[in-house]
Every structure is written in C-alpha cells, then in structure tokens.
Image (cartoon, rainbow, N blue to C red; front, side, top):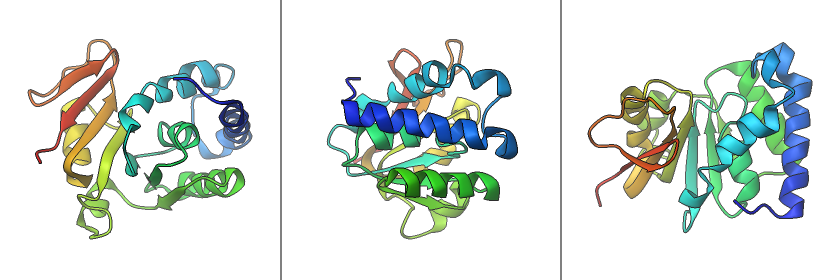
Length: 180
C-alpha cells in the first residue's frame, strides 16, 4: 500500500503513542515494541485494498488499535468504529483518535453487543479483525456487523483453518462476502 508522507508521519505518531501506553495497558507484547511498525502496522495495512469504495468500517476487538488505526490513517475517507470492551484499551483508543484527529468512533462493547445496536448491526461495508479468535468464530462475530453486500476480513496465519464460506483473498487475508 502506497502511504503519503502525511499518513507516514501519523503512523509514526501512533507508534509512539503505543510505546508510551504499552506497559500500563498491556497493548502488545514487550518484545514487539521495537518492531511495532514492521510487525503490526505493516501487517494491518495489508487490508487496505479492501477499503476501495468503502464508507463505513468496523474493527472488532480493536485493543491497541490494530488493524483499525493504521487503516484509518491510510484511508481517512472511511468512517471507522473501533469496538473494544476493555476500559483501559478503549481509553487508549480515545486518546489516539483525539490526538491524531482520526475519523473514528470508539465504542466500548463486544461484537455481540454491537450487533444488537441498531446503529452498528449490519451497518458496515467492511468488518475487520486481527487476533480476535479462530477464523470460524471470528467470522461469526464479524458478520452481524456487515451490511448486505459487504465483507468481513481477517488477518490469518499461514496454517489457519478457514470455514467453508471463507476464501483466502490475499496471503494472510481471509474474507467472507455478505449476501446482497
């Protein structure tokens, strides 16, 4: 994904916020702090091509903002919902959104709670997740948030067992298309 200079600067600012908050909020493993950009941001940006023509997206189990924050920075035209049920992590996300002036709403809820909310259930063109649950379970959590004709996308490992309705869209990216 080709990242403009302004977005690169914001991604660097995001990485610094993660490093500042990481130890007190358990955002990522201590060993990943030195390779955060290469391991986590670059991995998240692999979902970028799925955002073409998208107006609303949701990151389920956003935690430290992955993959939603890097994608919101790279594609600022997309309105993001960042779902995170844990208070400290939601507070971190609020700080990132405020500091970087991102087009994101942080919602402190689980995927199941969000699916029952008329503002959020079946209301997104794309739902994404990273390290949420095994693929079959993760897609079950994502699909109720996807509008008709939208997509759910997961970052998956090489040996991930995909459910029958999923397809490998690109290396490490599995998707399920919602019916029209």
